[in-house]
Length: 309
Image 1 (spheres, rainbow, N blue to C red):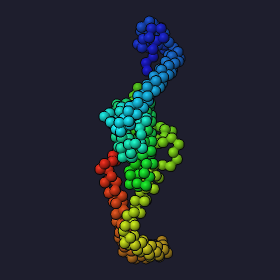
Image 2 (tube, rainbow, N blue to C red):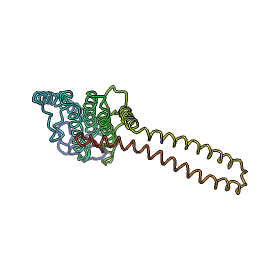
Image 3 (cartoon, rainbow, N blue to C red):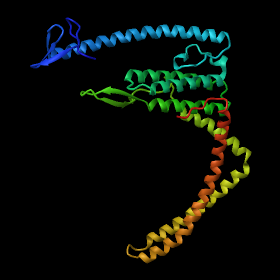
C-alpha cells in the first residue's frame, strides 16, 4: 500500500532531506509521521475490506442456500462448471448419496486448487480462504462416510480423498513482499489446521480401519496364503537365530584376528542370502493383499472421483 497524503490524497511523494514531500500539495512528513500515517491507512483499509468481505459472504450464503434448496427439491445435484459454483451450504448429503457427494466435493476441490495455482502471487488471506474451502469439502466427505460405514471400500476411498485434500492444501504457498519489495514465498502457517474443527481422529487412522477390514476379507478368502506366510515367518525367525549365532562368533574373535573374522563372514553370506530370499517371499505375499485393496479402489474409481495430486 502506498503512502497517501492526508490533505490532497496524492500518493506521489519525494524524499527530501529526511522528510517526505507530497508532490500534490507540498505537505511534508517526517519518517515517524509517514510510518504512523501508513499504519493508520493500512488498518483502515483492512477494516473496510473485512466489512465488505463479511457482507459479501452473508449475501453468498443466502444465495447458496436458495440454490441448494431449489436443486434438492428437483432431486438434482448442483452442477459444477467453475469453482464459484461450489455451494456446500444446504447440500443434502443424505438425499444425494455418498457417491454424488464424493464426486461433488472432490471436483469442487480440484477446481478450487486449480484456480489458486493460477494466481501469480496469492496472498495469505487468499490461502486461508482456500483452506476454509478445503474444510467444507472435508465436511461433505465426512458426512458421506456416515451414510454406509460398513461399505469399507467406499469409506476407504472417501478418507483417502480427505487425505489428498489435506495434503494438497498444506502444500500451498502464499507470497509477501520484503522490505526491498521482492516477493517471498511462504508456506501455510503451522498454526492453521486443515481439517474438520473439533475432530480428534485423523483421516489416516480412519482410512486404516477400513483398509484392515478389506485386507482381512482377502486373507479369509485365501487361507492357503496365510499358512504359507506363517511358514515363511517361522523360517525367517530360524534363519535369524542362526545368523545371530554367527555374528556372536565373529565378534568373539580378537580385533587383530582378521582371518578368523573373514572365515565367519564367509559362512554368514549364504545365510544372509537365504534370509533375503525368505523376506522376498513374505513381501510378495503381502503385495498380493495390497494389490487387492488397490484393485477394489480402482474399480470403485470408475464411478467415484478419486483424488491424486
